[in-house]
Amino acid sequence: MDKKIKKPELLVPAGSLEVLKEAVYFGADAVYIGGEAFGLRAKAKNFSTEDMKLGIEFAHEHGVRVHVTANILAHNDDIREAEGFFSEFKELKPDAFIISDPGLFAIAKRICPEVDIHVSTQANNTNYATFLFWRELGAKRVVTARELSLKEIKEIRQNVPDDMEIESFIHGAMCISYSGRCLLSSFLAGRDANRGECTHPCRWKYSVMEEERPGEYFPVFENERGTYIFNSKDLCMIEHISELIDAGIDSFKIEGRMKTALYVADVARTYRKAIDDFFEDPELYKKNMDWYREEISKCTYRRFTTGFYFGKPNEETQVYDTNTYVNEYIYLGIAEEVPESINLSDGSIKKGKYAKITQRNKFCVGDTIEIMKKDGRNVKTKVLSMTTEDGNEVSSAPHPQQVLYVELDEKAEKYDLLRVKG
Image 1 (cartoon, rainbow, N blue to C red):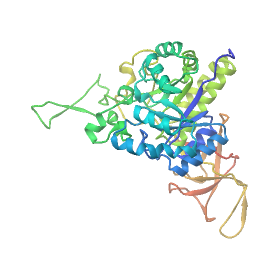
Image 2: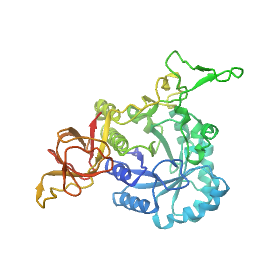
Image 3: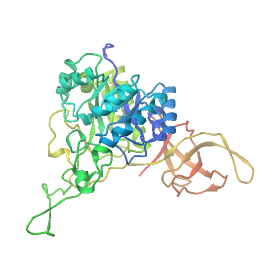
Image 4: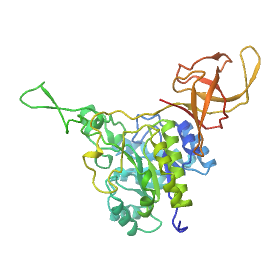
């Protein structure tokens, strides 16, 4: 591997403090998060000011950067509130803002000149002249439009200064609309996708109605495969790390601020290993390809495509017969602590290999589950016992969000993730 080639940043989404910690633990170089306003994922959990403070501190302690999304297309009322929003970050000290609206760009630059500004894909960044325009205004980085091929991105790289950073989505859900700018949700549901309230109507099932025959619905068929005519497959570029690097992309971005910790951990770990393997030895990367493919398929996905990177998508990039995810593994919880003993309700102390978790899905004593390790190992382990916070042993975990001490026959480390095959 040519040592002159810069290793790209792995940029991973986080919709909550818990998920941020998993993204950091499983290999992110940077995470992007949203506050309670101005982001395009209003239905995500998002971060309170206090959680944002804790998240930024945690990430920085581990050498990981934090980018804050403020990428809505703003209206007048948003402009009035923006000054207060950006002022909060004077003390929080994130590394960058991700912005699409020129008005918000100017306000952020004036209030927080020490914070880098990255221009969101929502700004339709399709050519090098646009990149240079944003650079003149003070942008450090521009996120490419999702409609660009690798050839086009490479041409942008050749026509902008070396210190102008290029960020591109390389994995996750694909929006059917141009660079994510969509009016369908506003029209059908009264919720504006450009202000963070998308109802995802592209995933709905559609029929045709002829104007003169109201109430008579005709199904939409495409080669008899189904009626989900806008439902795109998910982007996945795990097999094309070398091409992404050759195009000159500085930051590999994962989509998914509304996804679970299992999704984020799995995708972050897989791409982390793929990137590191490639830079250690391209032949090692090729050798481990089956592992990458297998692991990336263990998180939720809608089948895979390479999007626009190798040319315009065709009918094969859509999923016509269903709008649901493929979901091979079930998320159980994160090892928040790993005590070697716990106190039981009768006053006795019980020793063992414990993991304290906030349980997410049902499992039982006697089940065989997996411990996801940051180094790529998936350790099978048996659940020997479960104990509640008040020291009572139980045989199953039927209540979501219940705090449990789970005794395993293999040792977990703090922040390891527990999952089970569905």
